[in-house]
Length: 190
Image (cartoon, rainbow, N blue to C red; front, side, top):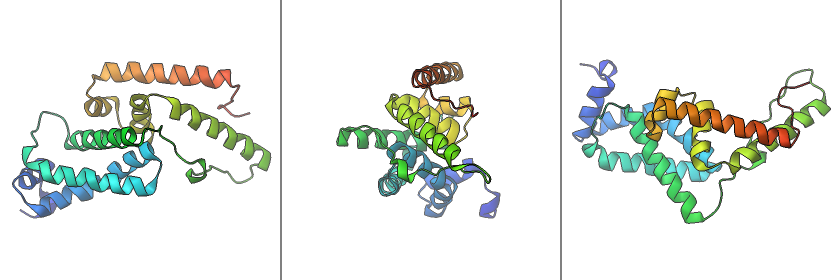
C-alpha cells in the first residue's frame, strides 16, 4: 500500500515499531501546528524552534510507548509541547512576553493614520491583558483563536471535558471584557 493511502492509525503503528519514515510523515503533518503553539507561548522564534525540535525529539524517543486512548495523536504532541513550555517558563522564572514589535499590524487600504494608531494601541492593550492571564487561559485562547480548534479538541489537549472548556472560555472572555472596559478600550471600532 503506498504511503499516501495509509491512515494516521497505520502510520502511528509503523512509527511505534521504529519506522523512521512513518515518524517523518507525522512530523510533516504536525510541525507547523506545534511550532505555532510553542511560538505563541514563548513569543520568540529561536526559543520556539528549539522547543519544537525538543517536542519531536521527545515524541520520537517515546513513540514506542504511545497508547491510543481515544484522543488524537495531536493531543499527545500538544501535551508534550505544553510540558516543555511550562518547564521553559519555570526555568526562566519570568512571565510570557511577546515583543509587540514582532506582532503584525492589521491595516486596511484607505484607513487614516490616526485610526491605525488607535487600533494599534487597542491591540497592544489587549495583548498586555492576555499576557497577564494564567497560562491555562492563555493556552485556551491560543488553541481557540490561533489554532482554530474546537472545544472538544481543546478539551482533549487540556485534559478537560468540553463543558469545562466552554466554561473556562466564557469566564476568560468575561474577565477580558471587564478589564478592557476598565481601561476604556473600544474593540468594536467607531
